[in-house]
Length: 292
Image 1 (spheres, rainbow, N blue to C red):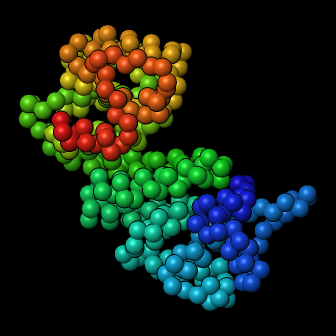
Image 2: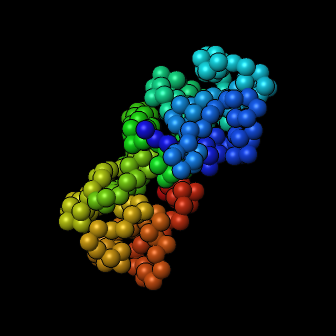
């Protein structure tokens, strides 16, 4: 069973801890459990109920009225709203609830509606990345299970792959990008989105996927002679200092250029070869792609 502190509830719901305590005392909305040493904690069911309460509260319901509803009535009211268009904040709150309940139908419905109306790029920037930022708080705090992370990742991955497959290949005079992730790098969604953005901007993409070692990478560079080699480095490179890793790739690039982004590019003391370019964030990365 996952347990939450009141600070966890504050982070996940956006409701201040002292307000949560007031709602507990005045309206009996949720009741914390206590350890043998009298430390308060909350359960999954408490978090679900609080998210539902916040959802209705943000829709204009008075907290006193919500306090008079039973748990099933609150859930039914929220379910009614999931069938109509939702504002940005409503969507984030609703998606959090659907993740906890592993509600694939409604989770997919919100994503599909956004992608249909706004396109994948805007949906990623306006909805999916803010959702992942919110969820990262939960995962870092140990508040969500691995099954929740896997559930969200697989759905978003399927949307990106589907949208990528719908893009027609452009003429051969566009640059070729070879993209990959090193062993242990956990940025598959970002790599897939990078693939989509490159393809939608007319670039040819050779996606080697995850866990690519230097030997295989050098073979691929020699075989397909890309214009750019692109990777994301958030984790430390396994069994090799970053300087050595970059130098080895740079030496085998030929006419290509190595593009790097991720937290490890901030490592102090690295001497970047002339054929290496650092893209400091997602915005700069997307600007580079669109200018290709």
